[in-house]
Image (cartoon, rainbow, N blue to C red; front, side, top):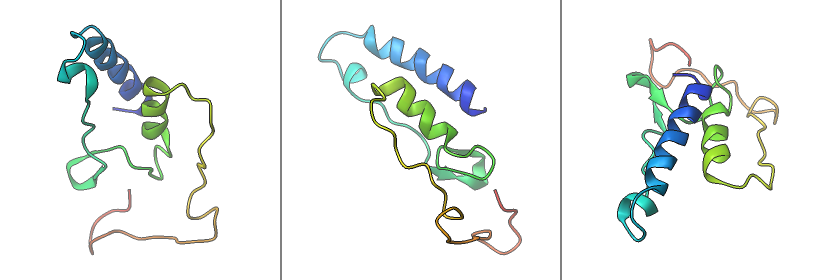
Length: 92
């Protein structure tokens, strides 16, 4: 999925959780999977392809968005570039 599709899914999940009984675990906890499962093809960590899109989707759905996080990348900060984690792996 792309960040827009992920945000739509999160909104459906939030609607489901909000409709759950008060005090239920479903209403008070959500586990987001996975931060960086690059090899399996699912992640929400920042990437060259999606930028901070997946994290912005989480922020859009679950916060009131009154502050602006620092979305600078390592390259903008004069760090990197970083290569693949393992020899032979493509860079994300």
